Amino acid sequence: MAENSHKAGFVSIIGKPNVGKSTLMNQMVGERLSIITSKAQTTRHRIMGIISGENFQIVYSDTPGIIRPEYELHNSMMKFVHSSLEDADVVLFVTDIYEKFDEHIKEQLERIKKPILFILNKVDQAKGTQVEDKLTYWKELVKADAYLAVSALEGLNIDGIFNTIIDLMPEHPAYFPKDELTDKPEKFFVEEIVREKIFLNYKKEVPYSTEVVVTEFKEDEDIIRIRAEIYVERKSQKGIIIGKGGEALKKVGIAARGELEKFFAKQIHLETFVKVAENWRKQERSLKRFGYRS
Image (cartoon, rainbow, N blue to C red; front, side):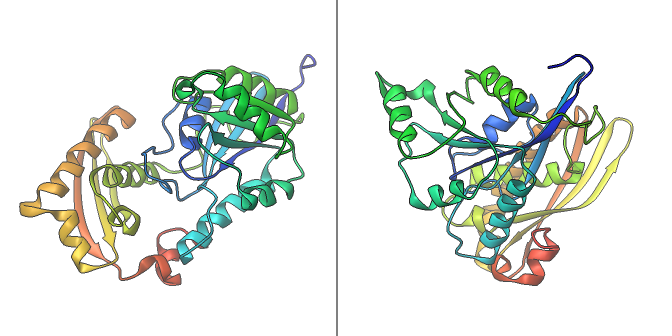
């Protein structure tokens, strides 16, 4: 980079569900901004993570996994993916050593006119020549400007991605103040952390039918008081979330509080309430209320 020049731009992280996009963004930014579970479709929003240096600023976008929509919610999730691609200066297409070629994904990639970095993730789980074989397999199917094998979980070859992005970034002043880490407010991360604990503690359809809304966030010098409402689609799901004698909801609250205290480095008082918003994933009004539509 020329002396006194400054590079800045947007990097969109895309791929199918559960390939490690959120883990990768958290590694690239050095902060836990995106929630991570082993269940697909955990990420529902576009979440920006900003990393700045003296002569660069990279604005990463973690996006929902690319799927064929079944609900109005899914359509909104795919709009977040498309909007991130419209802004992007560089696109990271993330796959893993287990994933096979998908014509739908190829169609999406062929529409992208910006530089694409192909990221083969989870190489820490590979055996024998699996990494080399997979890279050869994908190079024949997908055109990219660079192909990189990484482990987002182990932090392997993260520097390789960073250096390649910097090489491809345009010269531009910073888009955000240099001390900003994300475009999202604090309440958003509370909602995401509570939702993550629901994904980790319940099975089948229940986590996918759940949305979390923070209705109160009061920060004092040594404590943050939070009220969060958990919405489900059916009355029967409300009973499952609460559990016998309130035990299931209490477990979620304890886990979320612990995570929030690490995130905010403060004592947390968290109250949770469960409500029903029937079929909210299909309702335009509910999707607007929960921030999926403008």
